[in-house]
Image (tube, rainbow, N blue to C red; front, side, top):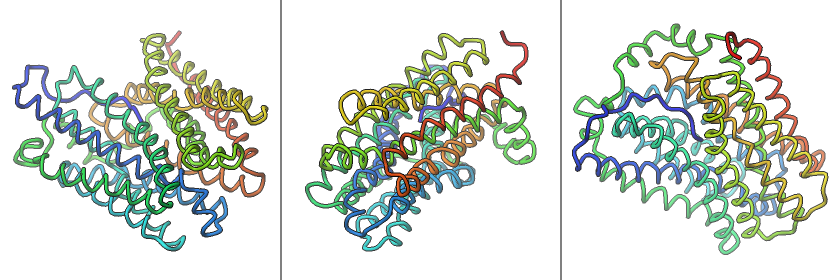
Length: 427
């Protein structure tokens, strides 16, 4: 997801042509690995119906298979990001990609629920710190004036990868069975990992000492003083409200990303291949909404943190209202259109929340602050969203469970309004 990134990259001076070309090659490979990351994560959602039918699983068990990845990411992103800074970022990226690719292959070789759940956990272990470490590599290779552009383009890969995982996974599963969907994603990841190993040279990217160039040296000193870092990460009620409110809103994304293919299969009687394709369109709506909502916040909320938070609240409530209205209709084009519109606003808060966190924390710990925000996204939103929706689906049915998701938007809006009350000096 697109987050504000600290602009502490290379100097704005002109880079040699060979360096610029190499930087774009690394960008392409790093972007490709982000696609693999999210393809491996989201392919499961396209094959829920087949796994449920073969093993007789409950919706709670299916939700756990999806949520355990986000849980692992949320818990491990912070410590693994710190470890990558010490061990070397290029080396760490290679190890991460190898872990999630092999784990995805193990998903396809699983023959019972426990082995599949264990393999999914390993997928989360591999993916936990990839986005933050990959972004750190990229901002060290491009001039600071291009950092926002590079960051936006890179994080767009999360939604594109989700679409590819759901769409291609559904197609492979319908033709060759659900295990082939995992194997296909694994082959793609392993091939990219090997290519990255051959092209990305730590000495060229990070220098002789394995430290990424362009990263301010004050960052390494700041990370040593853990108490000071924690104090700055939670320095104000506004900052805490942004963390919590943003995480609660992403609860909706966790539920919809996990269960839309199954909803389309059960309610609309769509075959897996078509259900995956339609769900992928919904995800693309979310992918379009993230940068557009962020751009609108930058234009209308420039210089006013209060306006930016109020715009984020507007996005959240629009998502909740559209989603609630959608499930008042019978199955049909009107319902699907409203769900697509709700998806457009569902992650609109990501840009404003990233900006707020960057504005409220010291530059020296921006990367750590973004990791904290990502933790909130996963622990409060993406991970429980899929699991809780599965629990409710077992008791109420899938459509009624999805109908309750807008409550997360209301809760998020309330928390952010509390944050607005603590802002001072803004009009």
